[in-house]
Image 1 (spheres, one colour):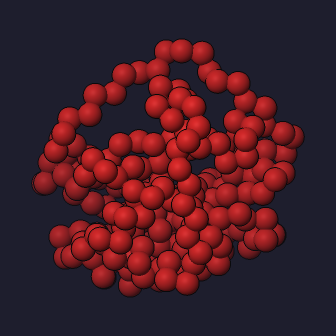
Image 2: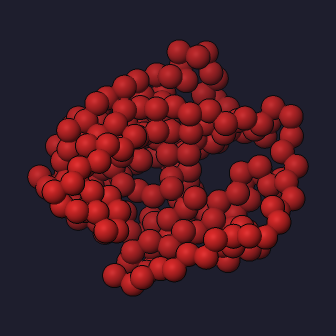
Length: 202
């Protein structure tokens, strides 16, 4: 695995002009306990960590997006499709859809779900959201050939997939970017993953 050196960004913040009504809302959908070795570099196999599975709603006058989908209504079955070593104890909460509906949110405002990456705990909630799925081409290719996590393929078979590319300028130390609304309020950048041809988004 190649070592990726990160240099902290120390420059000025880029200009942004988010319009009135822009907002950010957290939608926690549950948590799971996993081995640290599966979660981050340097984590030990015998060490366990709790991780939250959360969707984030970004409201914008020109249309809203969810960042990740969290756990879905069928999350327990999704977990059972994983290899035994990746299955984990979990606590399920209300799905993103349930939380949006309970708040009286008009889901017709949703332009889509922007996936940071295609792991099961980020995509499970797509099982109850009928909106386009946005992801980078490298991540789509990775998800299509993954053999130890087929949840993405399971939950997106009836979704429209929208690919975006990082053709925008450098942003906060990242070499390129994609500005969703063109006003600096929602900017996606490529965060290198492994294998090298895979790009995660932030």
